[in-house]
Length: 113
Image (cartoon, rainbow, N blue to C red):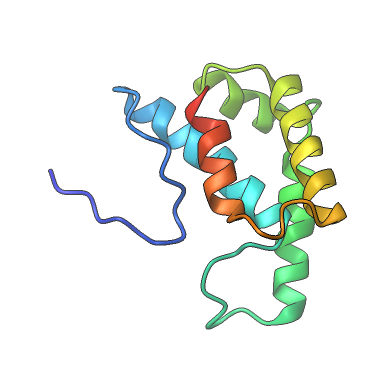
């Protein structure tokens, strides 16, 4: 089967498990959305981007059942993912990551899962 590569989709490698790859992609997309990297802004207005950021931040919460399920499928600990996300957003908001591609950083973090 051929897979179409979408530019805004994190490149997380292939774990051999479609479910695990999907879970890592969901977590990666939430990371990117939470910092406002929503890919092409063609049909998305500023208010929609803000809503998407808030929803992603709300999703990345170790007390939420759905987040725990995705982390379980990705074979990782929810608290670890939350810690990674907190560190990423802190450094992103401080401007320490401005010269780097946030997508590349997220890909490298999640490849290690």
